[in-house]
Image (cartoon, rainbow, N blue to C red; front, side):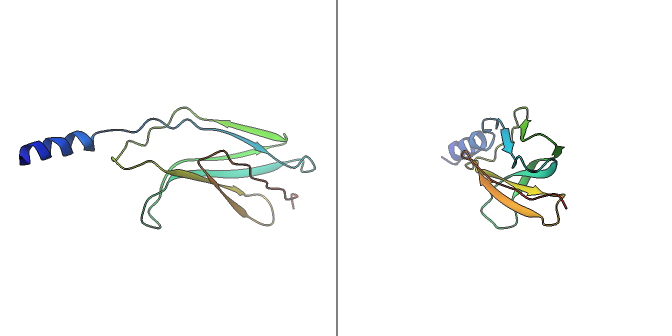
Length: 115
């Protein structure tokens, strides 16, 4: 019986989750002619402060729309449900604002004039 449990545990521990496909479309207030941002994607863990960051990106643009596309990302899997989230910070204004976005479709508005 213990051998069966050990075998079952070994098989479960090597199961990997599906890759995460990320495509983000960010829209800025058209009155802002140039803006920059820093976006962070991380896996949500049960213990606070133990979230694993798996992708970060910085960008600057003078376009109203900024599209970010990434190749599929595999988190490796640890046999626990995959829950991920992201945060967006506008980094080049006089105020840094952090916006939390969940893994569902999100609409986040960040509109600050460049200082």
